[in-house]
Image (cartoon, rainbow, N blue to C red; front, side, top):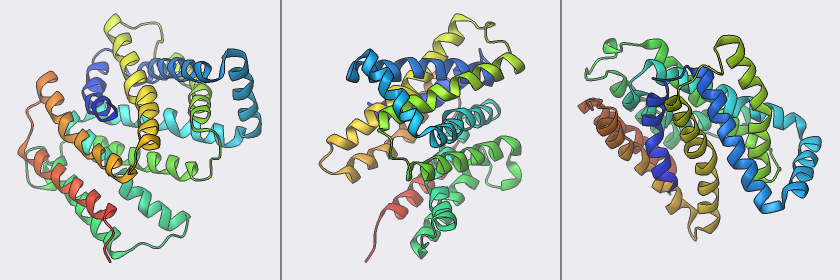
Length: 284
């Protein structure tokens, strides 16, 4: 289910951005996600006990809640939506998958973890795939039509990797943490939307697309993924299923958005996934 959810979101982003600006989209998608996440938390814990538990967790972990909530969803999705607003979905989406390589570099710099030759090879292969994809049908880096859009897509990988670095030191209950991260980001999202856009000037299609993103990119997808990892006898086999997502996504991008898929997109995506597989393998 998670792979299917994440396979549709690149298409959903582009559809939503036809009807909403990035500030409206971040506010309404976060609002939708808060609704479903808090609803799930209350179903698990009860309404009053759940509310007390959320307040207890926030009171004892307010610093990491504010930092994590600022990174995800607020800053991360603002940057990601801005990248999708400028780039074709088939370009923005594969670049976003290189966040695992960024995480490796950040772990080396911040956590002082050693980087192996295998990690360096994986990084080289992944970013070679990025160069191929951003050519958008050409085979030269000079063919890049929107450098700011590419820069935003790459920056989103840095923000996402930073979020996961912080998660290593987060001992909150995962569902409570996710609820609180989205709750604390809701007011800033509304303020940004009020100052830079109009939160009330939306169409039914815009509202529906934002709700879809809030449910199936942010809320339910995270819950399903975490539950899948808990239920799996072999988490590695389950986590490898995520590599299906970018390829399935191209089908939706082509059939729903009518984007002609460049041959360089297929080649570049295969190269990126090869790099990610190299990173995951452990050679003796």
